[in-house]
Image 1 (spheres, rainbow, N blue to C red):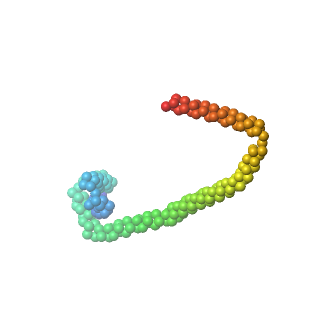
Image 2: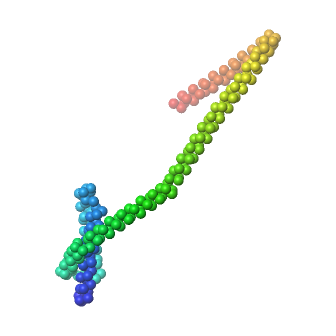
Image 3: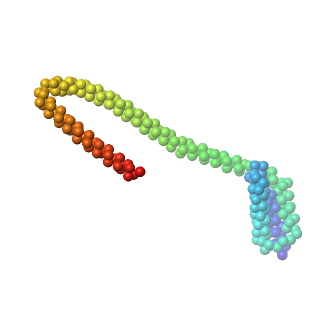
Length: 210
């Protein structure tokens, strides 16, 4: 391994040590350990350490084909220590600023969509419902008024016509009255027969269905 390769390896491992510290703080920030179940925390920790080990080894493979040296572990430790002493406070401040910015942007977009899309659509639906209900109530009131008027007109017309027909019926000869009564009774009897036949047919159909 040449000196230049060793120097690049040292710098890379110092950088990976610092990056590991930053990733560890980020992981701790989002994990929220007190509110997580222990088995879930264990799985997350295991995955985190595996990912970090793979990332460090991959970086080492790129710079020196994966050759391990004692100073590599020292470089990782120096990078982590440098992050803890110099960069940790700055990184955590920037991380919180980024999180708060993302939350603020999300809330702004959510509020904007609510005001521009959701609220107008909801107001339009409410307006349509109010219009439909108003039209329905108006039509119902109109039907009630029209029905009352028709009932009144029918009463006004029916009562005189009924009296006139009674007077005419009284003035008719007895022979015509008997003929009309026979015709009425015959028609009523035929109608009753038809109605009874219809009821019997319905009863048979119900029994077959059961």
